[in-house]
Image (cartoon, rainbow, N blue to C red):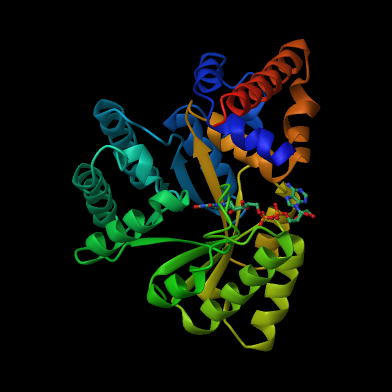
Length: 325
Ligand SMILES: Cc1cc2nc3c(=O)[nH]c(=O)nc-3n(C[C@H](O)[C@H](O)[C@H](O)COP(=O)(O)OP(=O)(O)OC[C@H]3O[C@@H](n4cnc5c(N)ncnc54)[C@H](O)[C@@H]3O)c2cc1C
């Protein structure tokens, strides 16, 4: 129920606009590294000082205007320049829908090509984040097109999809991030039960560790992390074949601990003003993540905003039901 609520809210345009207006005052600053590039570079330097690498995400998704997609591209190019100039240990994560996938495939591909080309000059990797099922195949197509020209590009395999193993095998020679999957997907394409998703997640990780190029294991789940630690030891898989990844602001102690233990660790560092959809998905995954907000900035405004959001969602659902949609 709560998962549905936050997933529904993640796509609410009105609240997205309101959230941008209120900046990060609603508490998202704990999971967003900065609103601009300078602040973000500072956050990266701080993480690097603990032996933690970063993957930087210019927040934003589901863009339907060319000028917005072009603006996002320019911003990412600036981030690449800033990574290079500051000599920080970081690469890029991006979402095709932010760069125009819903507008036109070739327009989006050209935007990504410019980004991957610039990054390749500085030997910076670019990860194509995976979004919902409707964008899965076009995103793989973009990867296919780009990898004819560049080798600094990789993507994500989402364990909740039935076809995850098939795609894993097809792309085994790429640097792959393996995740459980963050979107709400229908049972035609994806496992619905946590147990099934978790067991497929482990299966995919093991397969890619044994057969793939480089594996990024992206999870906050200590059961999975502990399992991987035992698995790599038992199979003599060296540390330079994989890394753990977590999101900025989540399980900070465990992030530091894993880096201290000598594992490669990479933090996913989102920045920018368009944090709303990203943050709502984090709440859908784990409503307790609200603690990250509540602890520091719980006040009347936050209460009201969440109340309004919940109300808007429930009313929206009721009116849709009445209309038989
Ligand atoms: C670096 C990174 C990149 C990602 N990229 C993508 C992407 O491109 N596409 C996509 O669809 N999804 C992506 N995701 C999201 C991912 O698919 C999952 O939705 C998300 O990570 C939640 O699943 P989980 O594996 O972290 O564990 P969950 O299933 O959420 O949690 C499992 C258990 O771990 C423990 N736990 C989890 N979080 C916490 C916490 N904060 N504090 C304490 N205990 C906790 C709890 O015991 C919980 O029951 C990414 C995730 C990460 C970390």
